[in-house]
Length: 226
Ligand SMILES: Nc1ncnc2c1ncn2[C@@H]1O[C@H](COP(=O)(O)OP(=O)(O)OP(=O)(O)O)[C@@H](O)[C@H]1O
Image (cartoon, rainbow, N blue to C red; front, side):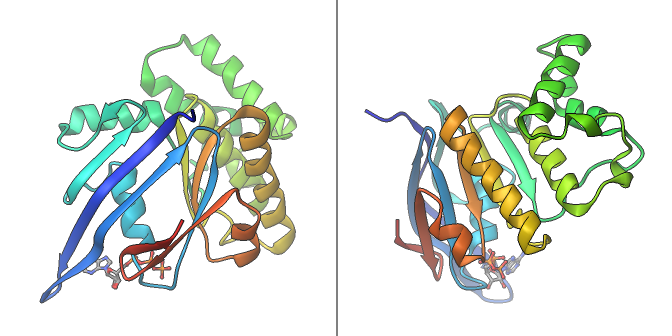
């Protein structure tokens, strides 16, 4: 049987602006280990809101969220911070790299926060991940010296540093041209296929979605296809 990595059940979330409207409306989904899942749907259907809930950054919802065997819902901020750092890797549309640091340092930073490995081990792990993404030759460059596509690959290496249970992405190819978007897609695909990395990626790009293992389609805060 497949191992469930992420499970969300009966998630409801409301915004009060100025009247109360449901943005996530009794939404349930689960993602198995090694699956590469895309989340699609029209603008405003609730994809980003869902990702905030699933990534533990938003705790103001009804329903339950589990990541691996751990119940996330109801945990205090300190525990949530640990869960985020240990179990979730993020890749956003914008890379959020620290320009004043080298590529290597950027990739190492979330590892240093975890307090699990020595600095030498983290450096070694960072170099391994840069090799996995074919950018180890950029390790000592400043983050501000890279192209958009290279920056996004560094952001993926950084997301991988703590061996997360799941990588979540919000339009990670949204800022890239077609060629670089394809490179980033291929990396995700390889991570899923060769490393059994679980991925949940919000995308507007139908071609991207079609080539993932499974499409979760949303409409008005609900899942209408999965
Ligand atoms: N902080 C907020 N307060 C009130 N309403 C909000 C807030 N954030 C989002 N919304 C509304 O919730 C709905 C869902 O927004 P969300 O950003 O999750 O959609 P989305 O599917 O990610 O859209 P897009 O594809 O354009 O990024 C929209 O109608 C949006 O206007």
